[in-house]
Image (tube, rainbow, N blue to C red; front, side, top):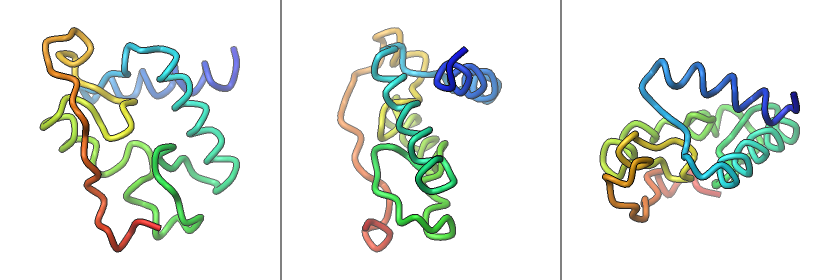
Length: 110
């Protein structure tokens, strides 16, 4: 099993218990998983691959995956900002696939 497949399996198991599922677009999902692994190697923690991390975990706690904004994003839009986590309705096509705006406060964005 590759590192990507192992992380995918571990996150899938732990996050499904919380009611979250991965985007069923597997190529996109695996690209995001690779981004998480790259950020873990680069920074020492898995920051969201769709946001710029500062490299200081104390400044980036809100964007360590799963980020603090995921629940609100999925509740309101059916998907998190980067599209890694989605609702079941989103995966099934019962929810519109719309742009998820950035919720991270401007003062935290690099």
